[in-house]
Image 1 (cartoon, helix red, strand yellow):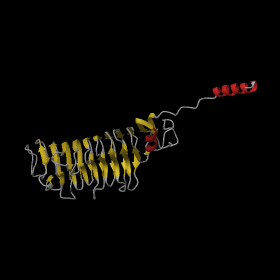
Image 2 (image 1 turned 180 degrees about the vertical axis):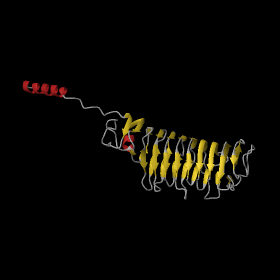
Image 3 (image 1 turned 90 degrees about the vertical axis):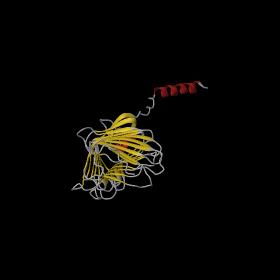
Image 4 (image 1 turned 135 degrees about the horizontal axis):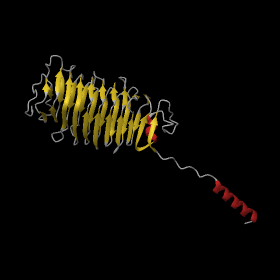
Length: 332
């Protein structure tokens, strides 16, 4: 190598060393923000927030939090990982779903999804408020959900065990005339759902609260509803159905009021179908005007199906044949 070539090589090497290193890809943040004035080209920081929930969910770290800075509509969102979406007190974070669409769609095996302080609107055209297909746990707290054709909160799992919490939440006006449900639990063939509903209002839906299992299901449903109002639902306040004699849908109502439910179907406050059990404590059922309808209605389907209802004697079930005694009710 000539002296000139050698010197040139040394010069180039030195120049490369002086060049700034390429920046490493920024790590995903544990907390990101959305705002009415934001842009999805922003990094979703507090100072440079995103515009939509979907973009914020896409960039936040698994298990992180998306926070709304001000009141606005932030668009529908699909969730595939653990995340919290929250709106602080005094801020209305809205999601308006399109016709036939879903406000929040969750398919996140093994994940925990927390939704807090959100307002979901279906305008009597969208299908689902929250459609949950898979995940380990979902929490719906301080939310208002209305105007969806299929349901406000619809939990469907097949092979997983899912924990559900719905607290201080309203699900109302979900297709009251034709099949809409406030909160629905559907574990599929082999899913298991354990649900707690506390301080919920399920009003003017077709059915306020519903459980349903396939006939060949090997899963289970256990639901506890406390300190809640299930009012003015067109078909029934509570409707439950299990899968088999060994896979019963079990529901507990404690300090729950069912007012004027079933006005469109003869007053079905509580409607137990096959393979169901229900336990009542401090439950008040007023049914329709005049309190003449049967509050607890038993469906004798699937030949010899197991249906059980229990009362601790603290209930007031107007017009019910089984009006609050302490003896377990085993009508079949």
